[in-house]
Amino acid sequence: MLITFKSHAAQDLIMMKDLAVTLLGIIGKHLGERGVITSEEMPAAIRKLEAAVLDAKRTHPADTTVHPGEQDDKEEEPLHLGQRAYPFLDMLRLSQKEGTDVLWGV
Image 1 (cartoon, one colour):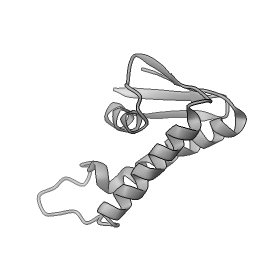
Image 2 (image 1 turned 135 degrees about the vertical axis):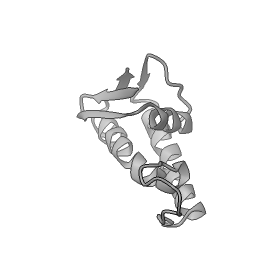
Image 3 (image 1 turned 90 degrees about the horizontal axis):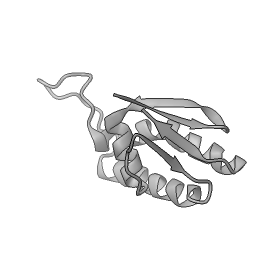
Image 4 (image 1 turned 180 degrees about the vertical axis):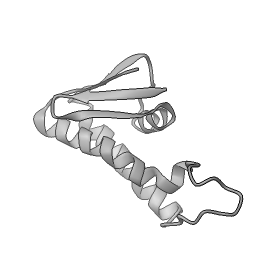
């Protein structure tokens, strides 16, 4: 299932449900059929997400090797959290700058 995030400050961002659940969980939100991150919540959401990305980098520094028997398309959450979170972080930062909310829906 795909989740679409929308903001007047950025282009729509479409991501897989598992990633959306992870990123929203980090900032204290739950994935419902629809939801919102208000402009007032934006600073805290950005701080939490940035902290999680830094923590993931410290815990798993640039280990991108594929081990025998693993599929190349297998996603490992802590390994790629930073790469996977940046488009969402960019949307949050742009939205904060413009004082607009981020909405999502399925």
